[in-house]
Amino acid sequence: MQKNSSIIKDPSLAPDGHKKIDWAAEHSPVLNIVRDKYLKDGTFEGLGVGVALPIEAKTAYLTVVLAEAGADVAVASPGPFFVQDDVAAALAERGVTVYASSDADPLEADRPMEQVLDRVAGNKEAVLIDDRAGLTRLAHTTRRELASRVRGASEETTSGVAKFKAMEREGILEFPVIAANDARCKYLFDNRYGTGQSTLTAIMQNTNLMVGGKRVVVLGYGWCGKGIARYAAGLGARVTVCEIDPVRGLEAYADGFDVLPAMEAAEMGEIFITATGSRDVLAAQHFERMRDGVILANAGGVDVEIDVDGLRSASSGSREVRRNIEEFTLAEGKRLHLIGRGMVVNLTAGDGHPVEIMDLTFAIQALCAYHLAREHASMDNRVHLLPKAIDDEVATTKLDAVGMSVDALTPEQEEFLAGWRE
Image 1 (cartoon, helix red, strand yellow):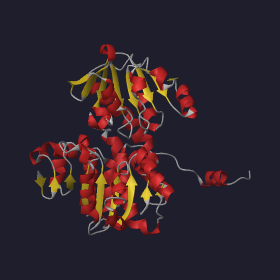
Image 2 (tube, helix red, strand yellow):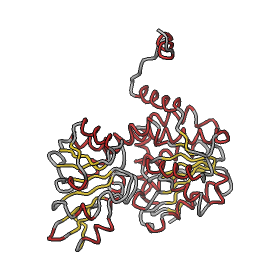
Image 3 (cartoon, one colour):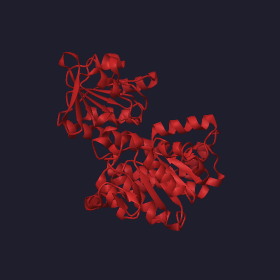
Image 4 (cartoon, one colour):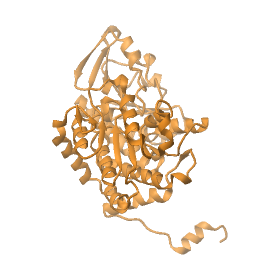
């Protein structure tokens, strides 16, 4: 169904969506300060802003803030499993164009993002807030004619930044990109604490099982894996980490976790959580070794970390045993339980990261869009880091919001640290 020019599932769901967005707004002090300090200066007037992010309350509030700043905002989700239909309906009522429905065809996931590009860059200049480089990929392929109107993009995910760097190496980037994911106020909090808390929350809510005492295997010890391992251990789990990087493996060991190859960990784990950004991290050879009743969840940025097709092929059948949990029966009756279709579990089977975490992330994203809108002409077509001053300002703003602050160097200390003489 359509609400204005939006394509959504059910406009009547909007009241519940408004409540969710209002709750997010109430707990987003940093984004609210950024809005009042910067975004109301007219920079976004008449500019298109295309957003490809999961459709939930925190994302929704970011798009509302940008729309209220004068931008023509259009949003799509990376796929139908990342759409909360009540939030989509509320957004459509708040002046954001939404191309998202939970019952859309997963095989046509590019279509809503193409509609976003057509809307925001069809007859005006635009900036993009991207997820896994989805919008940018289309602006370089099926919507290549629109690339010249894109001032730049900012990227939300680790896997997306990797794709952008590959494009940069090939010399094909048509506009500058800011690696929002690589901002300290993003990865140190969103990737670590946000992923850690929301992943374990999704697993506990959907299984209604204990984590304490269980052997939890975390595959990948980047910032997301570190957060997952930390929260699992805090709940009393016995944590094993699997890594390909020996330094990260040593770090996991120093943090108090066992470190084993995945094939060995497969035999002892009870809950497996992938967080690598790569494919086939858990595949047929691992499934064969797993014990009966294990839980499988993906917290990484790509949907193929668990080889779901291979799991389906190896099983004699499957059934839904609880909401968001599919049980696969393998040889000799062994059962493996997959949460959230093997897609990022905290969004397909949960509400995503805590609001306060996404307040930081989306303050970063709003400032990335603002920076691109104003400074794009002086930026090369490559992947850029967020300027340190912006990162520091977001952190300072958050500390102010919670009633805390840090020290400042004295002139003598600055001179001492900048020099080499006694």
